[in-house]
Length: 245
Image (tube, rainbow, N blue to C red; front, side):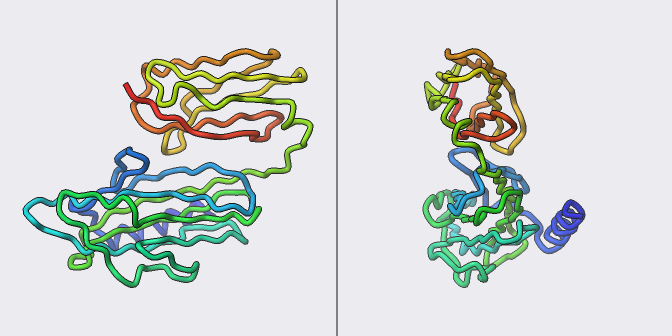
């Protein structure tokens, strides 16, 4: 049912907005396609998850654009809350920014937009689209959909305290990235690597006491990657690293 509602929402958006070439989006230095989906991973706590987007005016010839933004709630986990900022930050019941921000041709606005999602301790996945468009020409627009995915935090203190995984290094990585780990009791844990859009890239299993997990990244496409540590079917830790060749 959720998938059907999401598909219908995308079709309605596509019928309203014809995506143009004057605006483009990027996230943490990685360019996004006009209709791209980005996955954010987190835990079901009472803590905000934040995505920041850079907005570029790709026009040339002294042609500024007055840019407006709206959010579209495709589907939400019950009890969650979301807001967005476009220069000013708005309460959850505001869906469209009331005023535009001018972006000079050939420049990037890196500071004014952020999307905020708080699961309010509710696990699951929520989908929110953010649409940016030229106030003078609403058909000239670009959109990104963000999947905010949160997992239950009911992880036993004993399980969490028995597993240690270091931050990835070097970061940024070139040919490889490493993690130091220590398991204080015999158990199997998994380390999973995800791309920026949430696709599983690689998965590794660890079952010895301590050591170093070295992952070859020489064939990884440059950009941002996420990692998650799982034990007993629970996510114990997550983070990110960058690959640059």
